[in-house]
Amino acid sequence: MFFHLFTTTECNLECKYCFGEALEDTVGDFGFDVDYGLPRHIVYNMDYLKRFCSLDPEPVLIFYGGEPLLYAEGIRRIMDHVIAKHFLIQTNGLLLDRLEPRYVNRFTAILVSLDGDESLTDFYRGKGVHRKVIENLKLVRSRGFRGEIIARMTVMEQTDIYKQVLWLLQNEVFPFSSVHWQINAGFWSHDFERRGFAEWSKSNYTPGIIRLAEFWVNTMERKGIVLRLYPFLGITHSLLSGEEKCGLRCGAGWMNYSIQTDGTIIPCPAMWGIRKYYLGHIKSSHPLRLPKISVGEPCISCRIYGLCGGRCLYANITKRWNSAAYRLVCETVENTIEAIKAQLPIIKTLIKAGKIRIEDFNFMKYNGCEIIP
Ligand code: SF4
Ligand code: SF4
Image 1 (cartoon, rainbow, N blue to C red):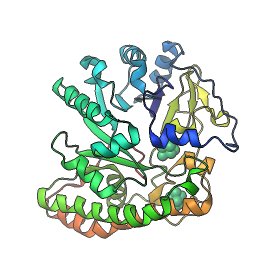
Image 2: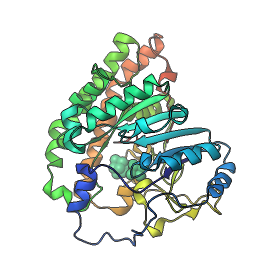
Image 3: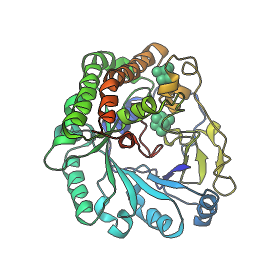
Image 4: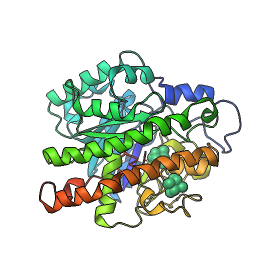
């Protein structure tokens, strides 16, 4: 089982799509009873986490926040005392230089928030962020980190998806081989009306994804390499393997749970504090017997539910965008699936010819990449 561990609720950035949106989203009733008084960093007894993880033969722990490295002491304590099959971290990357290599080098993967090139990343995340993150990634590599580094983009109207993914893959300062992106959609209640999501998704995102899928397969043809573009990997893997019902692809509420700073277990990191979805506590719960939470309508009756999986449990439950607005998000999912289906005959031919292998599409499921953007 996979667990996101909140080490802290604090963050050292004020990104436009997170802090900035929260500031503008103060009007109206969220509709849920939310505990806003969570401890700033881990306060539970480490023995509780040890006990909890010992009941799972293969626990995978993903450090998360806020910015998890703001409470690096918690990371050290956990890595020193708790046995896990894998440790991963989802970080903004700014403090990676402060964690000793003997811990960093044990991560199976580092998921680092980066939105593309310097001007776009700094526009969303703050001046100087891009430079520092790239510096830190070079540093951890030079200090011996050999695991996967996944650029984790948040995308919205200022993002040219094709251009920015290509920058991440092809830049000369720190080319990535693994990229994941997530659309900022359905997270806030009042942003759809003030944003230009509808126009952007049609004029930029949709054609950009089609071009990206072509580029992805073209790279397979030319170089025999399957680039780890997670949103493409997940869908293609299902299509190749004949998987008919993938389940919610991020795993939230059934394969991936989150543990708050007070030890309470919730289905997904975005659902912190929502008391209705408190599923247990690491002191007494069994990791393999947690309640399962699944998406409801409109996903259950959706034609492509088997391949999409429902996209996002948080968005499905909280319904912060109205159904017409959310329909536009679903159209982006349909487009991504169609873009990959259009390339599938070429992919199959390449596999048959031995140019690439079906195993090249394997990936660690539920590792923190949501897969469906
Ligand atoms: S496309 Fe939309 S409605 Fe269909 S399963 Fe995905 S999120 Fe749900
Ligand atoms: S996709 Fe939605 S449900 Fe899944 S982890 Fe992200 S916010 Fe949570």
